[in-house]
Amino acid sequence: MDSHAIAAQTAEPAQLEHEHPAFLRHHFENVAQQREAATFGMWLFLLTEIMFFGGLFCAYLIFRNWYYPAFVAGSHTLHIWAGTLNTTLLIISSFTMAMAVHAAEVRHRTPLLRWMIITIVLGCGFLCVKAYEWHDEWVNHHVPGLNFSIREFTHTNPAYPADKPLAPDMAEKTQIYYSLYFVMTGMHALHMIIGVGLLTILLIRARAGAFTNGHIAPVENFGLYWHFVDIVWIFLFPLLYLISRHQ
Amino acid sequence: MEQHPQEHHHHFPHPEMGASEPTHTPFRIVSPKTYLLIGGCLLVLTAATTAISYVELGVFNAVVAIAIACIKASLVVLFFMHIKYSSKLTKLTVASGIFTFLVLITMTMTDYASRAWGRW
Image (tube, rainbow over all chains, first blue to last red; front, side):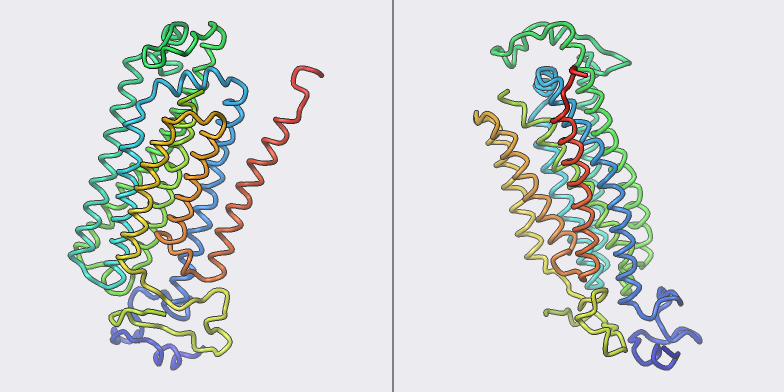
């Protein structure tokens, strides 16, 4: 395509000798193509993330089948209210992030800033609840390698009086449940912390006027990342908290 | 195809790169109403999956919980992540990711489930 064709199909005002928006890179023919390439690249990154968390999910399923009573006993020590609250917070934050992308698409700066701030607050709320749970697990000696005791599992759990106490060797296997629990929720929380950090940077740039000039790719692709982290939690929640309630 | 009046559109100049081109799809802004509806559905499904976990269903507790999680994830991918409105290339990328993930899970679980553990 020659330069006249580029000039003819751009709707933005001319900037010095460049007759296209400043954010359009020269190796793309137009904004639509640049946007499609960015979306494609972001999804390729998310595929590697699916395989990363997929490996953890796979390990969890295998060990749950092997040491089933230990995984059930471990799951019974989690707070179901905390998991439900955190799922709710993350789902609302996905909604507010979707609204932020919408605000960027229609070029409204104030709503964009507002939705971004609400998303950051909800993300921090999730991390606070998670920190409370981890603290609780530390206090109860449920942290393998650092602060662990099988005592609770060789005795009847008052919350589940029908559960039989585990034999000492099976009670030791609850450490595998907690190891996977901390790795999975820890990697998820790390993604949340990175997400909150990135969103803060985007917020600062949006305050300065970015992303409401038609250049929405950074906000849009961050939205994809945020929703992906939400999906990981959507699967962690039933696997860790729910499916062993009645076993 | 609804398009917002404030949005500038940059169309591919070549006739063969129209809407049928796998890497191109008309830019579409999803309405806040859709987001609100999907967000509401996700919250209802969260309440449902927590409530159902209190009901004794035997092996189906896990089946129902995972099924609800799959429905929730699909809603997020299709609407919040715009896959319903994306180009064929993006749709195919997502589908190949899910397929590869299923291969990872099923092949590994098949191996682990079918071995003669402790008998070799």
